[in-house]
Image (tube, rainbow, N blue to C red; front, side, top):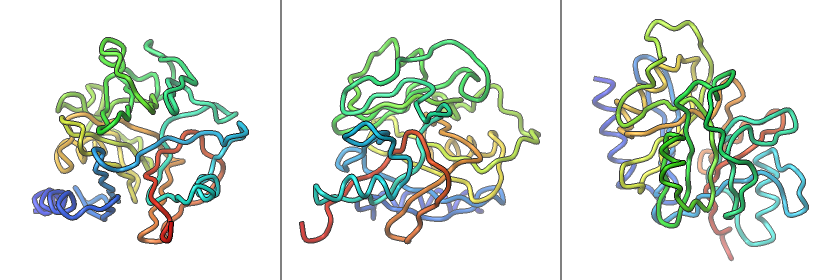
Length: 247
C-alpha cells in the first residue's frame, strides 16, 4: 500500500510542481524527502566556486553569490564526491567549461564501484548516463557531475547491491526520466542501504536511470519548507535558481 500511495504522490507532484516541489514519503518503512524538478523549464545548475575562484561550499554562500543578480536558490543538495580540497573526484563541467575529466576506470570506494555515472544538464533536459555510455554519446552538457555508483541502470538495480547489506547511511542522489524532462532528487531521512535507496528510484519514483551522489555527508536545501542543512563545506552543489521576488 505504501508503494502504491507513494507512486500516486509522484504523479501528483509532477502535475502541481512549480520551480521545484519537495514532499516526504515512506517506502519499505524508510523515510525520504523527494524533490521533483521540471528540467525542461527550470534553471537547474551546478555550483563549485565563486567568480573569484573561491570555494562556495555552503548553500548560504550560493545564495550570497546569486543575490547581486536578483536570484536565489529554490532547492539545492550536494552533488558528487570530492577530495579533501573539495575539488571533484570525477568529471565536472560548469557553464560548459570542463573542470575535471571523465574517470572511466574502476577504483576504490563508492565512486569506483562500476558502473558509475554522470548527471548531465543540457538546454531543456537533464539526464543520468552510465559513464561509458556518456563517453560514447559525448552529450554537450552545460553542467555535469560524475559520481558513483549508479543506483538504477536502464530500469535495473546496480548488480552489486545486496538486499541483506548491513551498510547503512543517510544517502542522496538523483534520477531522471527517459525523455529528460524530470529530474528527481532524493535524500533519506533514515539510514538506508544501497539496495533500499536504489529501489526507491526504480519502484516508486520510476526513473529508469539514477545516480548516487553521496552518503553520510548528504544535505539538502528547500526554501519552501525553510530547510537548510548545515555542516562542513561541500564540493559540488546542484540547485534550482529562481528570481528573487521584486526583481
